[in-house]
Image (cartoon, rainbow, N blue to C red; front, side):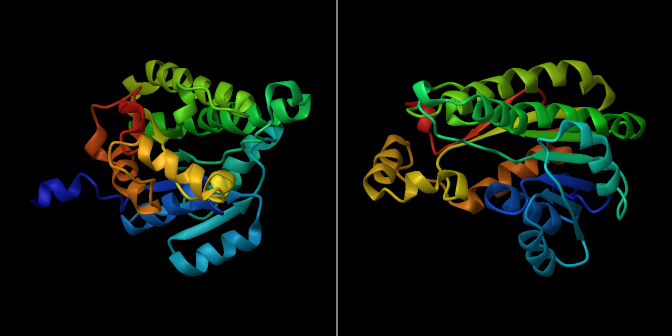
Length: 253
């Protein structure tokens, strides 16, 4: 059993988590730190990151930054490596959904959605990949969505970005997996986060979504723990280019 437990041991790893100030990004930072990793959180809200540091302790540091600013990506990764070194694990949890219907999608809303949800995961990974190659080990976890394969009302730009994440995950896996770097994506169902607040504020809508799952409920934050830890550890050494749907069977129907 010790060998099995060691598959999920992250005590010698450094993880960088974007969107760490709230929601699934915050949960990811806590889970990876609990597994022994040194974690660097990246988000725009410094106060929320400071609160997270108080909760996690010395295994957590943070950088206040905007992953949508592509010209600052290299500097952000270097700053994030100051305390613990370059990351072995990247978790791209930062996300944006403007919820604009097609006729009202603005140029700015479109650009920012794709920059945060699709461009940032690639360019951040590109900035960190050399160190992973040198070590011969790395894990990159993107965040897909129910909207990677389904169209929802008011989700045009978001759906486009999440559809792109599926192919980005495959393409990065094809490029980098021979170097010991496994790249996969998690596709969450409906979890109670800031991004889905509009859904959960409507009790009837939330219940409809729950009934669409095979399990009969919406997600709890802790439901992401096991899948995330699997994809960030040696347990997933022969898994790459895949999307793991964590949706209670929503997409099985």
